[in-house]
Length: 471
Image 1 (tube, rainbow, N blue to C red):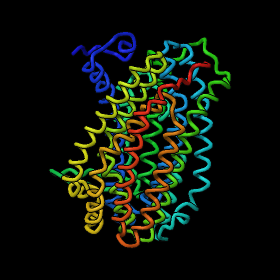
Image 2 (image 1 turned 60 degrees about the horizontal axis):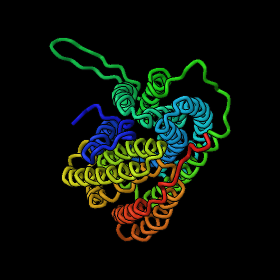
Image 3 (image 1 turned 180 degrees about the horizontal axis):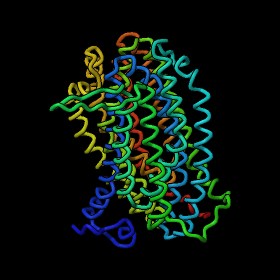
Image 4 (image 1 turned 180 degrees about the vertical axis):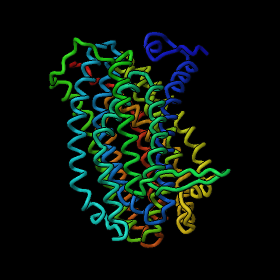
């Protein structure tokens, strides 16, 4: 197989199915590795904080859905500009793609600052609103406050990572996200724990520590996000062959670009808000079950993220591939890339679902020393294993549809699925089955959602989208 095959080559030449699969894999693998680094970072935070006890895990778990909401809004804004970039590069309009990058940096800077301010203001009240036990509210407030302060960097990292991926460069964001994981380990080590001394062979070494506990976990992650965002911004603006800025470009606000971004981003933002709102509502359902259930749910979500990382990696590749194909006016190729990506993602997540079921006890042994949390966490994690192929379909299909600029209907599908099926079923089952009821509802909802996305993909209406026709 010719390893020099590129997206642009597939736009201009008729390639075989085997060659197209190779291109999807070549773009997916770095994106999957980026997902792995992100998941490893979550494991690190959870394991390091979990070593402090059940209350530490529960305090992070209480606000985790709220941090996902903030991160989801950052992703929504990034999508509005990165989809334009993918289609413009597919149409060989590189000057216009550079202009979109400038507009996106302005928008991301303003939006990230506003999001951070909102989070900082809400941080003292959020744990109480979520029904957290008074023993964990203080740490939960500290964690969310520090995370919120880092949101401008989270936004810039999300934006530039998406921009590079949609330009066809999956390697750079993968390497930088892996570096972020390494930085997170180092920062957490020195910030979470107190100073301690090692003695060996007559030598004594004192390792300094800030002894910040849960707050140290948040600060370590925030510092890693900030460093990675600055590196990602530099690589995008000055090193990317497709996107690097030239001296002749203008930073003047372009309303058409912002309007197009809004048409893509707003449905994604509403979907993320509704879905994270549903997850927050789910946290509200779980919170009265006690600290063990809150901690087990949080760690089970972290453990399950190992399973769906291939889906999000392939979904990122699908966005770039479909976006550039649509921009080039090649609808047939866009459809082929979408289906190859979906089937590949489903196959990968079927394998990881099996592995998750088998190794669930080992995963929880890493995440927490508390036996009650381990036992409950393993039982709920195994409930969802069978739903992973359907989850993959929804994730990858969403990425493919987003590349075409089709965000409103898929967002509505996610919204209805979460609120009308998952939350309703959770509320009905939890009084009888406890935390297991929540995960049974989740598993059933994912199967229904994946089936709905398959139907959306089959109908093909999304192929008529083209977000750059007025640019």
